[in-house]
Length: 615
Image (cartoon, rainbow, N blue to C red):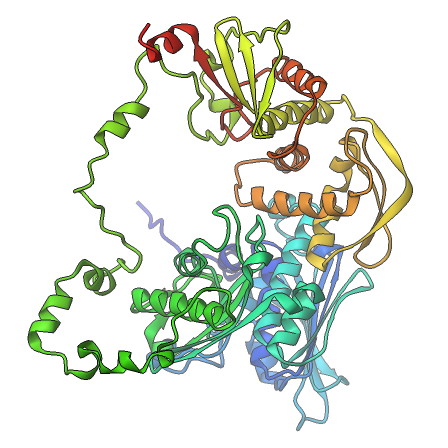
């Protein structure tokens, strides 16, 4: 038998590598911007056409390359940053693997112009399908200009998997923002289809944060600055009142590299404990500087996931730094030991720590939580507390308990069929009653129900919007005085993406220049005069749902609108409004749960009530 194992041709091997590094236009944007930063550029311009599918060009004034380097840069694993194995553990640059340009050249048509300050002329290199098409001298400015055209032109299947232009543009803006935040002393601009989206002049970190996140955040930022021998933490966090329903404005950087870390995010959330609602997320832009030998950045192709040598120490430092910052600005209560000199005379302060003291501390659960691996936020359960009688009170007696749906299913397709078959009617000849301006008590043919008015209205609106998406369009009322809406670049790209779907749901919105829109009309049942806040809140709600990838864009938008437009708890309702709400609720296909699976009402049956009173 002949041998069957053979080496892959270079062009196929490069395309496979490109699949890890270049997943969409935004991936190429990230790699090219980071290369420009590594080249020492002080001005970096990003130009995209057709959301990066037709053109991605990065122009910088960095060091440039020699003729030989310009050609070598496109070889796999060709890098100027690694000379020996030790260098891999002391990485300070953004790129280092030598994969980016080789991957880009494997899936796009690439043109590079580059020139060093000491060279009389520059070098032009044209690549296609990993092969050099042309190389020649060229007159150009110092620095580099690299343009990649027709992304995935030779991999049509990959191109077909790209999203629409608005969605891909949002990803490009996200990557641009992350690099621009990392290097506030560098000028950055982003131009899309000939229109400048960002123009970021060099300045301080706070100026860059405000430039990107909006001038409205200026008064909401709290400075964080903690220096230790192990690591330094600096940046900004938002005041508790600026917390949103989405994670959108949350950025962690380690040695100026953007990272994703649910673990460190948990540390920040713990610092805000009891200061913000549980379903809210604070703004933060935090930088950690530490010895590269203490972390491994080579654990993921995009380098957005890293490993710390001792993650529990980093966790504790991040949490303490944020808590300290909030306390310094009188946002959280703090103790000032300078106020009482007698504290300095206490035994715990004035006497040395004995071995007996050390042993006592080391045996405590708190000490062990911060010294055992992965235990920085572990809380030891208290087995001594006896809550048995409370548990028994809330445990469901078979057949007698209030009828309440279960936990959030995440998808209506998973709801058991018997839930949908509940034969329940509310007695329309009785008077329903609102209590606490949040709940409705209504008599039924089997007892009575306690309705959560916000959850019930969310279910009603959800089914109405689903029907609209299936052809039953919602009526729109035109505004007498159309409102103009100014958004951040990222939110403007998101609204562009949602414009068509919003139209079927009753919103009439038109573009109006750079990052601006005019709201010409809203759904007929939406209160007039608050259109701008409604759209802004809708975008926040949509981004909140966007963390769950199993939903389609239409499903996320439908759920967002239902959540946003539902009458809120605390709003008084007239008897007529209550009756309309109950009528519409019981006309729904699934009246007893919200789109997210939470109960809209709890049923109390007659026999259960009789047993409660000893019947």
